[in-house]
Image (cartoon, rainbow over all chains, first blue to last red; front, side, top):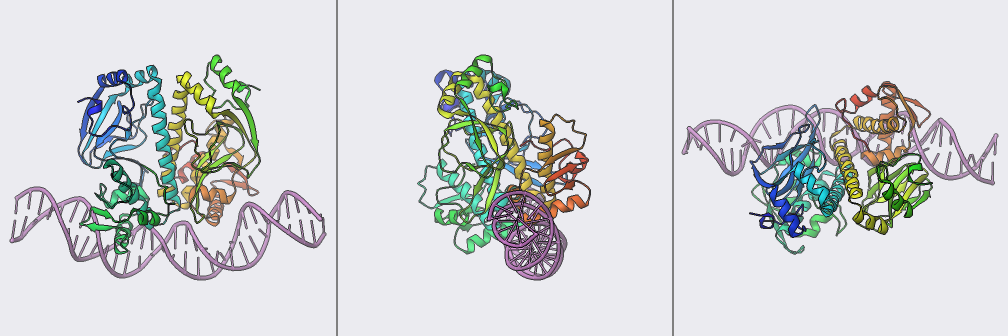
Length: 238
Length: 238
DNA sequence: GAATGTCTTTGATGCAGATCAAATCGAATA
DNA sequence: TATTCGATTTGATCTGCATCAAAGACATTC
């Protein structure tokens, strides 16, 4: 399996590399899988690879001494993992579902960065995207109500699924929630009880449909986005 | 005035450039000042420069249609401004105090980026720092109490002042608050009344001393950090 | 030195979401 | 089919912060 075989073309690293660069990347590439719930990297440790998510979902989170935790990143397939040029990990990285990563050993990857400027350009753009997402998320955390927070999260996930499956933005979207109520609460700065109540409120109001506890159908993306308090086109990616 | 004359060596752009690169940067550099309260760039517009803050304080913020606003970035002297490789501005950039920017025209700057890989490396590191700060801030917004939020903000500002003035982290720090109560509330996802109450509570408890409404003295950084709920060494930069 | 405007403080009250507690559901296992 | 255990829902109550309202505190201008 080589880079262009990955089921999903990584937005992250090799999707725009030249053939030569792909060959160089191939040499330092390996795949690694983690089980649901498994820790990928722990805050304070050093991480010897960078890479991207091929399948599954992982999260980045921060924890206070007393146990309060806040998720600060949600990694879906094609997202980049790692901090090129730095060895310390500053958040906990955890597999939420089973996860396959396409990894590159960090040291040789960094050597490659020195040789191939355009790889660094690419990483800069990825990082700017992550920064935009983080800042959009700050607005959610700081200023939105619980209902708007839930709608925002569902909209993000729905949008990503639609993109991965190449659906038009108009049609109804259906997907399985990749997160537990608790993980959602960590994402949104709420308690899991509030998450449960708000999801069911959105269901009662017809904004979403639920089949079981995890399967969600969004009949009309626009009304979900309206609930999220975003302007029509807005809304962030990861 | 050339790049190395800036009162503060920009962490942002030219502080580690070679002489050649500095010469190239000089050619596309200019200074620009904004008055307190003035808008530097408005969301949706395009911005024709990147640069860094030489003096004064600027903020990045996002606003919902109904007027709720959340600050997503605080730019202190030496911080980088702009989004290399992109023209759209996705937040409002505003001068909080009078601000001097050291600007580089964006187009030629981007050309320079292609020629000088190490400049891109530098920008990647800057952006990773901003991302770390944004994520730390997400923990503040999502999980901290009003008192902890205030202590966190004061700690950030105090730390930055200490760094700029090269004070040892142990000694008492004194500074003028660069933000109004309202700006602080936008930063922290609170109301200005709550900000006022919590500041006065911290004063009453001896964590900070106030002289007038803006001048703050932190007799013991460690107790402020403890109030912020951070572990001793933790705490982010911008 | 009165008037005006901005920033800040202070008080009273209300409510969204937290907290505490106990069911209920569903999947996996025996 | 019964048992167990994690995930989720539901209910009752509490509380931290928002909201609404009004009164200082300063600086600036006339």
